[in-house]
Length: 154
Image (cartoon, rainbow, N blue to C red; front, side):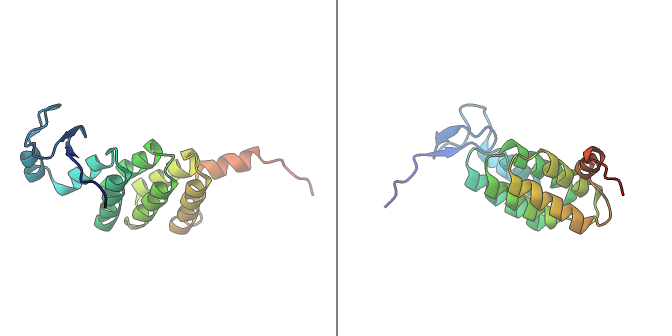
């Protein structure tokens, strides 16, 4: 059987602190006050910076289920901040797909991922979502590809 953890993470600074701590010795956050007075969506957005991928993944899934377009930027930033985690990047794209279709923040987030994410799987899935959700519109990356493509004569 696995060993039980002897610490928890501070919900604000993510420092390792004793399991029975009520206040973080590193940053001074009162853990109960933070949980009680910080709105759930704000705590989820903050959890996108957690050092454990499992915690980030839980926040990504929960934010997708809430489908609040104000979280698009934070989800996009998370995918780019943790760009070595392809599974996380793909789950972020799934969560972005739950957002209201046609929202300008959604288009901007998908364009950023299609252009900037180092993983081909994430870039191509983001490009696919752009084509599906915004048919007939070209992303800046597509416009750049057309501009640099060699012209053929008839």
